[in-house]
Image (cartoon, rainbow, N blue to C red; front, side, top):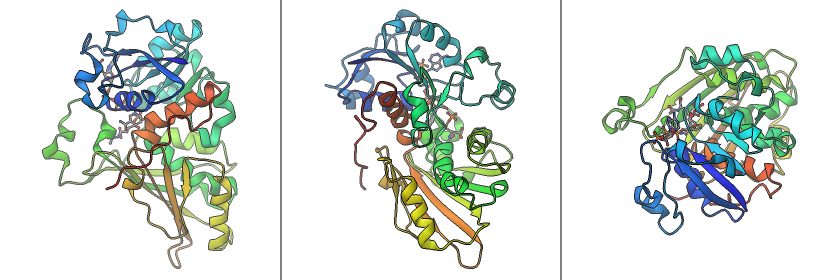
Length: 345
Ligand SMILES: NC(=O)C1=CN([C@@H]2O[C@H](COP(=O)(O)OP(=O)(O)OC[C@H]3O[C@@H](n4cnc5c(N)ncnc54)[C@H](OP(=O)(O)O)[C@@H]3O)[C@@H](O)[C@H]2O)C=CC1
Ligand SMILES: CC(=O)N[C@@H](CCC(=O)OP(=O)(O)O)C(=O)O
């Protein structure tokens, strides 16, 4: 059994890790930290886990995480970089759900995240944890940078077209919407019920930190200079993410060939569903599951291809993807513990 530690077990991605890992046949939950809930049984805070998780939260300084085989950081940016060096030196694998190791360039990290990077020597060692595009590297990784939720949708949608050289990489547009759980469990005015329900707004329009993350990753797959305009929006739902991606086609290709390109690309990927051409994937078709569903469209006379991508921001956008990486890092079948079917309605 893989001994698992979770730093930040009370947050939304932390409890999602608990939900998935408590039913994972190869994982043994060993330590779960919280600074505020030290000593509280996990199931007292989250009754859905009664009978499944019999551990209590521990203050981070009271647990020896070096006894674990892998530690997940479900914490704000800056926490994993402080603790990863010690854990890695002790032979513990680390999966960070935050952004500490996603950008290879320290200056870019510090510019976008507004905190100093305290472990820049680990940036090269970190492997970007998007299995569909980086599977082999993840298998031998000791430090994984789990992608952001929006970047997962953008990369999986644009990648086949970029790799095939079919689009103008300098003019990619992503218009994306997230449920409010994307902002985490911490108290903030913008996520109050009376602010976020019955309301709809864009944010981060002039610059969001997921733009440099996505551009840097997409740049690996094309010789053209990637240019991306990304606009996130907050929608009044709890879970779910919908990205509408636009790209200009630079080569002649018919609808059937476009569809075949995506089907061929993802035919071995259990968690990417290429829906029939012209479909309209719904966020609820991924709710609680590790699936990404996508569909292609060609608006009449526009010269554009539109890719619709949906996922659950807390599962494929965060904790499910992190467990998918863990499975690869420990030589388990990639789908282990991740085959939940989405909740409907
Ligand atoms: N929500 C989402 O959809 C996604 C989130 N992410 C990223 O995952 C990370 C976690 O997100 P989320 O679960 O939403 O966040 P939450 O705010 O819901 O939870 C944060 C957790 O971290 C703990 N924590 C906070 N500060 C510290 C600290 N200094 N040291 C140790 N533990 C700390 C908190 O518990 P306590 O205060 O008790 O210690 C809490 O358990 C973030 O970096 C986020 O950007 C990535 C993809 C999607
Ligand atoms: C709705 C909402 O607020 N979403 C978050 C993204 C969550 C995520 O993926 O975060 P990290 O890159 O920080 O890990 C945001 O836009 O900041």
